[in-house]
Length: 92
Image (cartoon, rainbow, N blue to C red; front, side, top):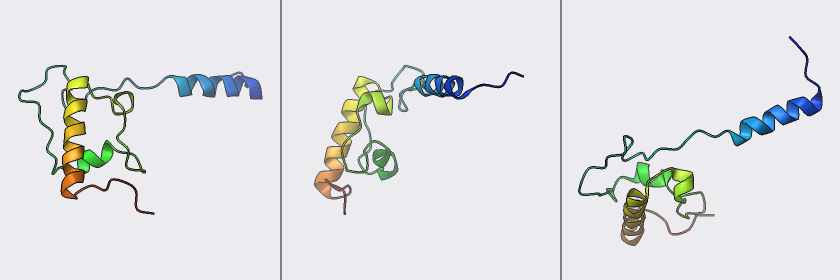
């Protein structure tokens, strides 16, 4: 096998960073979504994956959700915050 020098190794690592896995909607993985579209606001395990450390909602390009489900996730997060299940901001 050929040994790579430092610049070639950096190029290979950069290329790997750009190649990201295609994200799929976790609620409708096969493209067909069940109706009615509803995300449970009491399912905190799922909702915590949709917000970052500061408490901001993650965008679609980060979560991989389709537009319909992202809107439902937004509604669920807002409901959970209003009730007090999720914080509005991080606790620091």
